[in-house]
Amino acid sequence: MLKERTKALSLSDDHAALAAACNQGVGLCTIVGIDGSFSRRLGAQLAVMPDGSTLGSLADGCLEAQLAADMRALQQPVVTRYGRGSDVIDFRLPCGSGLDILLNPAPDRGACQRAIERLAGRQSASLKLPGISPLKERCYIPALRIAAFGEGPELAKLGELAQALDIDLDCRDKSRLSLGQKASGCEFDRWTAALLLFHDHEWELPLLEQSLGSDAFYVGAQGGENARIARTMALTKRGVAEERIARIHSPIGLIPSCKTPASLALSALAEIVAEYERLHAAA
Image (cartoon, rainbow, N blue to C red; front, side):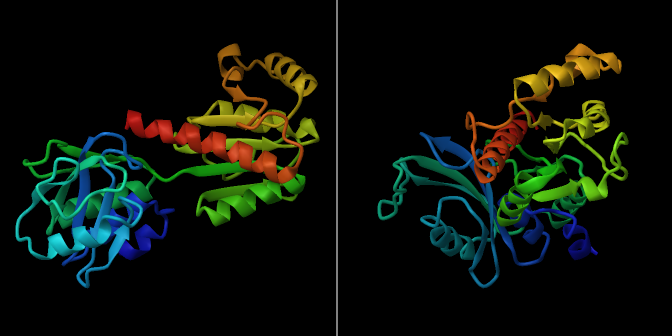
């Protein structure tokens, strides 16, 4: 049953580690303190499998073997310092930082399963950590989902990038849409981004109304200045409130004046991921 539910997840490293920790014999490592700068967020997790292999990513490969070795000797959870300030003089992190990592050889399997079920149902989740941890609770948000509508090579390139990055993408071109109608069967929750990539902007209005009236954390629409002005006037005429129209990202993306479909898709995707990353801080 759990295996079927996790198919609904586009698993991030942390979600994958959490899912693995539902199984007997799997230990769970959690970053509960960071001394200096580091390439992972507080709460990042990695699972140690019974055979000593790991699932997830904490330190770009420089720490995983040490964690697996230390986990084998444990019966109870401990918080261990690695890197700067550690008593283990024969192990240092290349970045020069110090990490406090909770090593838990037997996390609460039921709590891990309940968290995974909530994530699969597109709900935020949390996992209480042992009392020895300075971080008392690990909070999770559902995986990024993108609902993209449009036409042409920009939409195709977005699909290629999303597939390569294992991002859940609901991609709909004109063949799956009806002019003047909202998208059927399309749900925008607070972990979903809506992106419109139309050259023919008359297709946009009902889709923008649909996404702006939802909890989508990002709404973006392709187009130059004239298209943006016409879009604003048309939405206003249709009764869409000014504060909702202001939610639209346009021009889209982090790269100014993209000249190829690939660069535009990459630019838009980078902006969406950046906005999604900010959601972790509010979880």
